[in-house]
Length: 271
Length: 332
Image (cartoon, rainbow over all chains, first blue to last red; front, side):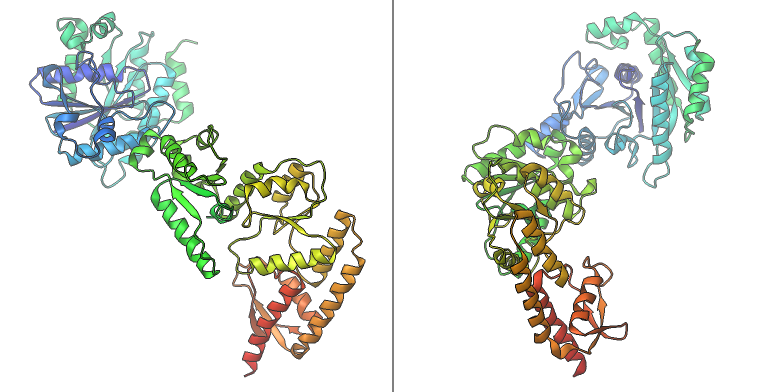
């Protein structure tokens, strides 16, 4: 079983990438599970054709711990088993604790199985709770999703710090699997992200160009893989799926100092 | 625990510890045990908002609102809400829940230990929060307010009696004991006092707050030591416009009687042991020893120093009885 997690700055396209990656993996015959680790609970929506599935935490709240696997795991496109952790409304409670509680429950329910489990995790690793997928031996390969924008790289670099820290723990087996450039179509973006990946001791495993078909598919409540399977964008996601499926190269990242990151950005972004 | 040691002494009030049951249990158990040691058998009403994992994830504000509603249903004089580490960590807006339109006054006492809080900061926080009951008064002629009595110190009533006695020699009465078995209604009248006396406020944290709030002059601590007790009388007289000379003379006489009562200790040799943490300073004990003709030297009979200085002349007398037991015990 391959357990991977996608991390990156909020709004960078993690859920879109995750859903298309899961769909592409499922198309190859893999048994895939995608777990949305974000209170916004919108990670699996395109796989579920626009359906907002009940979240683990809402169900726990409603029924206590008397819930079965069938109540939290929903089958989406290509048989992808979809789970949404859920969490509190904005501005209240502790979402990080919610992620920990979700993992404990899924473990208890023996729900974590399949060829690939993909964890789609909220934004930066803002607290220990959001590092949960990297802890206790869950996700072993972490993929950073970033664009060439400075703040996106800054967030990716921070996640590298978390991976480097957690990889030292006895129970953690996480390492950086690679960097995915979800492009904003900035000039020189691919080179910038590639060099960033190399500087942190990893590699660029995919360049996902910005394409309108992604938005059109979303409006139609589908992944690109399902909505436009013959499109160039779908090919990019399929290539990404194959790369990840066969990837055996991981590394413990060496995060950059702030001045190194700034120097890198200045080198590639015309000022 | 510091906040609870204050709120539990608000008459007919309910205290809610906003946090997990465990936080409430450990603090309440400790409070009950201490009260029993003081022969106080009235159990203060303390309840927990009972936060569990669900409330930690989704927020504990509604659990708190339910606990407040439950507390209000018994028509207490007030409800005190003490926040805990968990609720501050998850960002519950405890103050906003307390500020809702409740049937009885609901007071928020911020008390999260992880923010550097100690027993003392919780105790101060509770005094500040309950001070909101105080109403302004046009006149200041209704006696002396005692602020921040240490409800869990063993000598709390003896200390009160001594301060009341000393003030009585000036013709002054105690107006409000804030907060020692006092009702919110009585606290409202505090503004009419002529003097505030803090139990122990060496840094002036309480004094500056209550001076500004009430416009009443204050003395920062209960009287301690022989000269300190006389100075207390002089200061209380000065601040209230009372001639203290007769009271000071009377007290000097009492202190001379004290020396006579313990004249058998003259010539004894003692050493003080403060266990490395007691807050009372040795200089005042040395003053008392000198007054009685007792020598202080490292080889002397070891006298354990109390955590706080004894209050007033009668407090010194109680302490000297203990000194005598140690000195006589050593001689036997």
